[in-house]
Amino acid sequence: MCGATKGGLSVAGIDVTKEAVIQGRVLRGGTPVAGAYVRLLDSGGEFTAEVPTSATGHFRFFAGDGAWTLRTLAPGAQTDRRVVATRGNVAEIDVELEAA
Amino acid sequence: MSRQEVLVDADWVAEHATDDNIVLIEVDEDTTAYDGGHIAGAIKLDWRTDLQDPVRRDFVNKEQFEKLLSEKGVSNDDTVVLYGGNNNWFAAYAYWYFKLYGHNDVRLLNGGRKKWELEARELSAETVTRPATSYTASEQNLQIRAFRDEVVEAIGKKSLVDVRSPDEFAGRLLAPAHLPQEQSQRGGHIPTAVNVPWSKAANDDGTFKSDDELKQIYSEAGVDWDGDIIAYCRIGERSAHSWFVLQELLGQKNVKNYDGSWTEYGSLVGVPVAVGDEPGTL
Image 1 (spheres, one colour):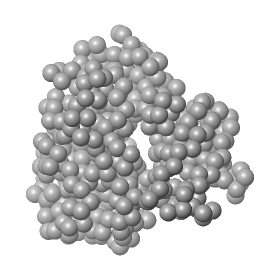
Image 2 (cartoon, one colour):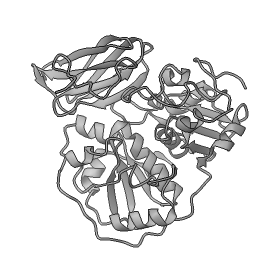
Image 3 (cartoon, chains in turn purple, cyan):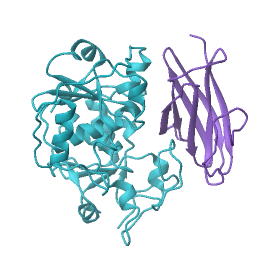
Image 4 (cartoon, helix red, strand yellow):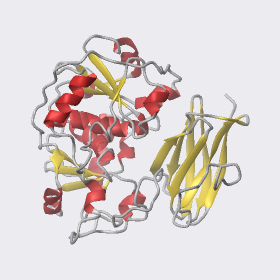
């Protein structure tokens, strides 16, 4: 996969110098979870975006510089993870859900 | 309007999806979502290819809308129940669109596709076709649609409600953060607009908050309930969600959705733009 980073989503076609990318996977017991909902909250806790995870458990956001929270919802599980994003970088983060 | 007339829950859909006069329709931003699995019996509308003119930036016209719904098998007296991903953003957009063309009985599935999935309810990959009908649309109801000149004229006079996220309102982001940020329009908001993110109206599972909570949210933001209200976002889908809250749930009769929204306004030559977290002045 051209442009792949650390086994994460390919960033081919994205000008990462202009984007503060936050991406990763949602896992339960190490297994990717498809169709989980990952919500990006700003530093004030306000909703900024939300995506369902792909068939391989992946998600991706184009944020701005600063501190963000990833709130993940899946059947029977909810978890928050903090992440810092900076323009020109790809923040890779795996969200581990509690085993239901 | 009241909540009972415009919202249905998942149990209602499970019970009534196959009734003769019910048409269940999924509308998503990710137009491939439906193909991967949908609520049994639901047909699909593609907000881009079905509802937008393929050349100009505008909606399909009355005749095109009639042809679309006739081919999809929707009748004028059917109850149309809409749902979708993104907390029903595009389903609410389609709801507003059906109202624009005068469909009588339209409802939203509260919580949309997300709540359905979070409850681990069943999805079907089966192809759904309905027998063709002969649908008749009304002329567009422009009481619920605002255009750019009216919006510019409304600065400082009417309640402008920017329903994007605080970072988009302030100009720190140019699009919702699931989309790349490199966009052609300028960052910021229409001066004097208040920022009431659409998400304040919804719970985490995508369902709408109670009427009392909703009323309080907009009141605290300074929305004038006695005056005209114009809601906007980036392309008009999140503001259709807020339009639904204001007009269909709270019963306001003077609410318009500006579907040109920030992708139009933020590209206009010569109009005032405010940046930062405050509404700003003209």
